[in-house]
Image 1: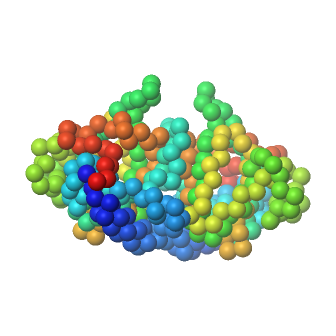
Image 2 (image 1 turned 180 degrees about the horizontal axis):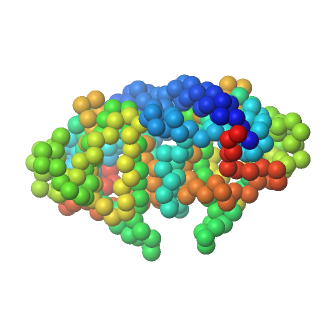
Amino acid sequence: MITAEKLASAREEAQTYFERAGIVLRPDEVEGTEVADFGLGELETTGLELITYVNTERVCAKELVLFPGQTCPEHRHPPIAGEPGKEETFRCRWGSVFLYVEGEAITAPAVNPPAGRASTYTVFHEVILGPGEQYTIMPDTRHWFQGGPEGAVVSEFSTRSRDEADIFTDPEIQRATQVE
Amino acid sequence: MITAEKLASAREEAQTYFERAGIVLRPDEVEGTEVADFGLGELETTGLELITYVNTERVCAKELVLFPGQTCPEHRHPPIAGEPGKEETFRCRWGSVFLYVEGEAITAPAVNPPAGRASTYTVFHEVILGPGEQYTIMPDTRHWFQGGPEGAVVSEFSTRSRDEADIFTDPEIQRATQVE
């Protein structure tokens, strides 16, 4: 649950990040910025702000904002409707993002999962992206990511997005944002 | 055919457009900027400068530059390998782009095809895009586009790109750039 006030303030803050990244948005896009708190009501630590440019049967493109230290929690995109899951490429445009995926775990990760939720984070192969750097996450691969000290603006290029089909490691998470 | 000198100078010029659009590129991306003259040797009028961020089996993302008045000539993306053709969304980031697709033709287009090549341009449904505006071109749909008076930077989000399969209306066109 998120209050309407908090949602509006996160939208406004997200806009300042898009501006810093030099990304031009239409007024309807700014107004429609999605604020995801993943049902935890801890937006500062677990959350994501995003704009979806296009989402057809085959292609999706989004612009993501992570506030400093804000984490998009661990999840994967399973196969659906006879197709492999969503494939996504993250390209950092501004700031930095700490991305963790399946693979050899780093012994001392550069950042930690949100306090009190560490048990729901299981993959620790570390990828750090600065402006101009990118990484492709193949379908059905667990991953999570966190904004660096200044936050991050990240472009996502992917196959069709079906957020409602995402499987989160944390059973408390609900993908659809509910406004109080 | 394009000379190595002209190619280098177009790459350098393209970089100034990416900078104006606030797009951060890695040195290897700048160096690898593709300059397409479509085999006509008339880059100022018929050409395109581009960087491909990602091109997997399912998803492609590119950044395009059109110099002022420069035209990407009319073509379509036919079905291939049992799949529908390429679907692409153009999002203007900077400047303006004049896009023409199949559909009801406008009586007085805002811009003209390159001089001497008008007979190879057959679609005139006009779409004008400024920063933040976008348009999705469905598979196998003829289209062409031209940079506005200041030029344009355009993000392209699409299914897999197979440039070699594109069908151009102008039979003189060769998609692969040949350097003298």
